[in-house]
Length: 258
Image (cartoon, rainbow, N blue to C red; front, side):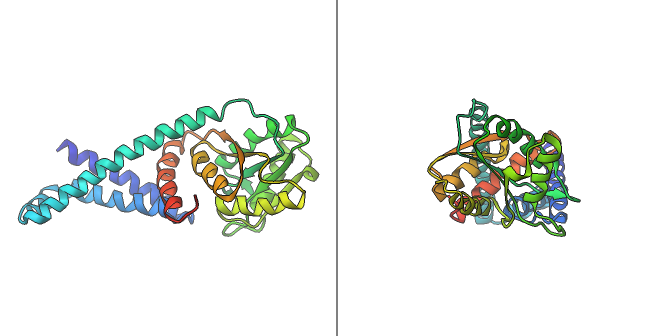
């Protein structure tokens, strides 16, 4: 009975969470797969006895059912390994940043012309580094989102100016991208136009949950010395973001982003 209740609660939370993300146009591997998994959990929680009765009528179906749960347990272990690796990377990103040629701040969404809390944290984290490394090129990276009239890069640059008095003349805006891979690809064009090589040390500022995937994409694209600077994720969405990032990481691997 307790197992059924736990499955139903976990599944319901996953479904609601993913539906909210989909309503805000976050329809991707990292939201669809947990949504389907939540549906399976709720179905097993509510109809456990009926499912068991049906499964046990066929030996091969029963074996297949147990195989699926075994695969789930393997996935659960792999998720734990991912979280451990992520925490190790987050700890490494807290080390002092050496001198860099450029600072790229990756976008993370805006609402009503303002950075989301997650994006604001990235900009808050980047600001001290921008102030301390006066010679570093600064790039804000993010295109025009659904229903928006300004690019994310422009909103980010305005935030840095209004909040930290960082001159807009110093900030180069990459306003075409719609993904992490595009953030880094289009930023390369700006770097090249300014005579900077992606072989140079380049700081990439992103959220803590995102640093493994962002670093892998950067290296795959030819950035030889990406220096990751992680911003804290707001507590209200932190663990959800870590969960979704696992699936986004798998998705990136499947689609050859790294």
